[in-house]
Image (cartoon, rainbow, N blue to C red; front, side):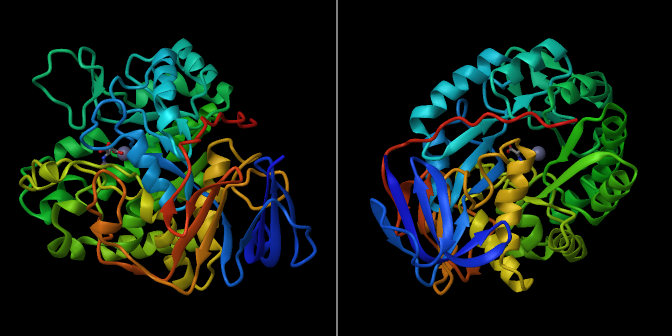
Length: 460
Ligand code: NCD
Ligand code: ZN
């Protein structure tokens, strides 16, 4: 039996903060109770003056593994995650080969396991040609749900999802469209797994396509209407089929309004936004350059403020990073050619803690990064709370020291960040994965001991 006792911290449990000791026995939390009343465990951690919070679950990361080792791999991804207090990552399926079938998912899991410093789950891919059988097999292999990249084609020879549909590829399969979603939604609903969309309507994007020289060109080429239309259309399909629809990286006030209308009309909908959309606006482009080129784009201060308000009042329940590393060389290409995406997993918790503090309620942070994500991913039985019976995935946060985001701190293979220069009034001190230390005093420790998580199916 191994025991970990975290003594004297301010524990952020499901009912709010409470001064308590936390005992973890063989990886599972066995007691959360008033200070001093617990007997000594094998390992005792002094957490006086610290916050004890649930490990974050980042539902939207791109490990790039297998496929693009120059950008990232499971080892570097999960090192950055661990240092940031992220104890579970859910990896997107646009690796190579793309995760469109059970066999690919199984090989990816086998490759990730020995490198993973945190637990991980894998999303399956929806292709234009995906069949119900393929999705059922992916579910049986452990997929946490399915992702449809509207407008992103699939190269059948390269086994790759193309970032922008490449007309020169003779083996390009049509991107999944609303027909694909309508065709597969009933099966996904039966499987009890979420359907995730990259919500930008391809017809609107193609109507506004233009050369990208300035940041204004980017905003005009990917207007908020594209997000709102994709959400409304997918939500209509979700409502009819009963599938649980998850909107990845919500970026606009207009998209938010479409989502709220859909929720009111009875669609099962969850919303995710990312720290970049909560912290930044187009005004930051002169300072940050292509480092903040992401799809959908970071928009105006009014969009940012609407998203912050929705996160504060619980309409948006999930903050994830869309950690999407590209190399410095790629990101330093001219604006139009630089790939979209930016790393972020290491700063998820810190940025959310700071935002939550400014909103006057620090406990919003664990709700956004742990409780909401656990429910989405079907992990709510085991993860997402500091409470008896839950995995001992715990983060000890020092609320009196500061972290300034800078390249030297980053452990992703890519050290740039769109939050570069930001100062957060917290330090992630220690991190435990199922009761075992993976970070002590801000430094990685121990071996890669991450496991693949499997979702409990959603109830209809
Ligand atoms: C992501 C990537 O690079 O894989 N890029 C991005 O700009 N968000 C893809 C995605 O999530 O859309
Ligand atoms: Zn996306």
